[in-house]
Length: 241
Image (tube, rainbow, N blue to C red; front, side, top):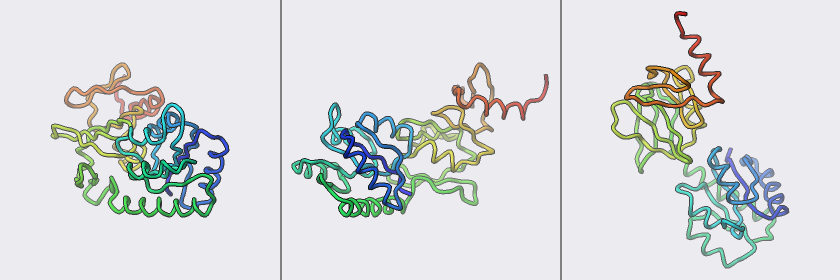
């Protein structure tokens, strides 16, 4: 499924777009947003593959919003102003829908989104764990192989992840969501302890005052939402009084 958001400050236009999204079998609506600011908040929390985005919005226009993103999702601009079409293609928009548009035009734009999505998916950012207990990540126009056991922790940074690897001086930076990598890492070896951190449980050196100390004096916080699960793990491993 292609995860999609709709962004438009006009309630009726937003309602129409979300209704059209529901008619596309390979689309999954993640959120309907009334502003670019609201959409930015969604992108920080959710994995989004594509967005249908109005250009002419107050505070932050759709064009400005896309230009502010380091790695934007696939974009289809929607607007009532034809003069924006050329600008839309300057930011590599997949398509441009001129209001008012019907379902047929929307379906054509959706097909273009799917084509681009499939091309991107030909080389995914991260593979499944292979037989040698490793993952493949796409970073800096190349694909690197990392043994899962060498990953010390994963740090979430907005649209990107920093993957900290044993004996590597710098983390590997990839365009990926915390949710996606959490799904791929072995649940018996890795645990999310904070909205921004997933740790390799075998790298824990100390736990004190709601913080976890890893190798290299790395100290990470345990978030409130994850504390119960983490303490349950410690209880299962704890020996002594």
